Length: 351
Image (cartoon, rainbow, N blue to C red; front, side, top):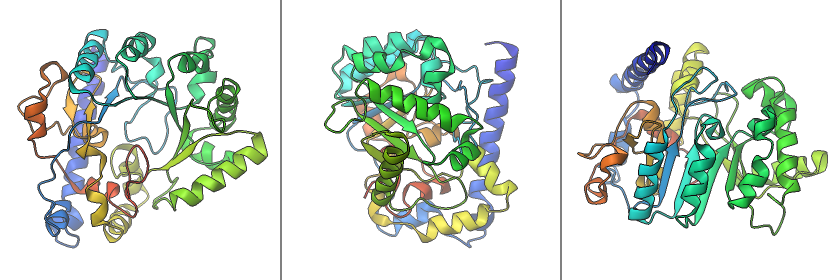
């Protein structure tokens, strides 16, 4: 790894440690708010244990063409962490061995990995039930080499899940950068043109909503109807479902909360909205997150905090289902974000 990449990695690790100290200190250390461990213990849900693996979520690299304010991956054009073909091959072997029904590729912009198309082609041969690619949409219009992605996705029956902060230009560009809204609309039209998101189509196109500030998302079902109505009326765009995801207090969003002096209020709102029913279905119970370099995590949020699985087998190259199924899931105060209100996961609400 080159010197600049090493410095960036070391900086990211130092920032993860700093953020963990913030999350475990202050209002939690002083007893003003109960820790997440204390909260789930009240309903006999500690330690949190995994269910059989259903979803293998793989981060193929932190490189991205955008620098979104809410990004919990801290992705951007300057990130050089990229998954190799060797690690991808190990991931495919795990999918075959475990029988997990969903493969979920994320980033950064996963399409920017030079081995992305090879990975999709090889993984498609395994016969996965739901093959997800999390696209930021703008990558499709960013360069001519990406403009055939809608057809490529269609060829492999990829389930496209895309971030769309709002149906208006102002709110979207405020969160993701100037010009993002217009490029997202262009990309959605290109996806619609090949059949994605059209009513009755098996080519699934779902959108993801994250709040643009220090507040929780509204009702997912109601928001979906608002998104569908606005995008259809204004642009003639169709999509299947909307996932409303709570912003977790980590990475850039935690930095924003601290800088805007909203951190404590936001944590209070998460704890006050805690829903014990959501704990049983949080994504860390049926998902394993794999980092670009093959390390295993209970979820991609833990991945960003450097919290590897509590297991003897911590890398995709030594994956052992029996050992991993007996682990305790690592938790911290950021987990309140997944259990607030109707709950939150990469597939939207959980209750």
